[in-house]
Length: 271
Image (cartoon, rainbow, N blue to C red; front, side, top):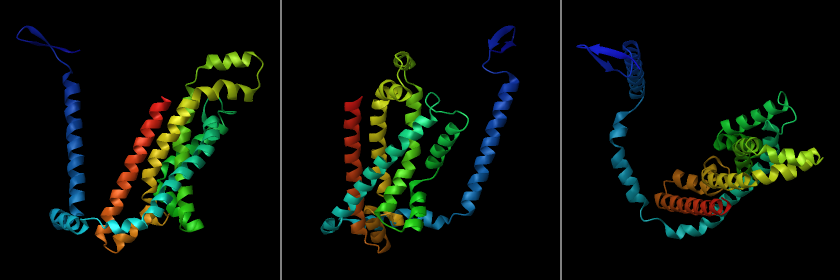
């Protein structure tokens, strides 16, 4: 730590003069970038609508209350579709994620130069594209509907599940694997008896956690035509049926809260 002498006394300083100047220059550059970005945002913003937003929001809330409770009879099937989209999409993703995870883990992949990079690419490609984008692409290929939503959720979830799972595989206790290998067990027997039991708690936790996330994501897939309660929300928004919109939002909130509760209970039981 630098020392500075003032009136014959030594004073400890956290940074040298050069370090302090460099820090101030960094702050000035940061402030300048912020001001420039703010100017760009301000130039492309219609501030009249921003200042008028509280009044518009209040007007929408007045129109949306009370919710149209009689519309609930038309939401049972869409919310069931939403749950099915999340559940089936998660199951498909788990089936696909397990082999990808084993191929991506350093201690289980057959080849760290060829197969592992391919598996990592699959993981990155899946995670880098949002489920809404996947839904739009799939709708263009196979048409709108629940099936497109299921596939969108599945493809989006593969990378998430595989990434967490291959990290769990790489963190296993190698002594158990060595002990089973020493008995003359085959590669598959080592995997079944030495690796799988160690990663099963992580696999169960990942499965429930991803299902919880997919419940939320599947509620909005209908906005692009992939089925579920989002489709009802899109139709109500397009017709400005605000009482129906408020009811749909309440149903979505309730579904997310229940899924969160179920997920927390299951994870607590596993852990």
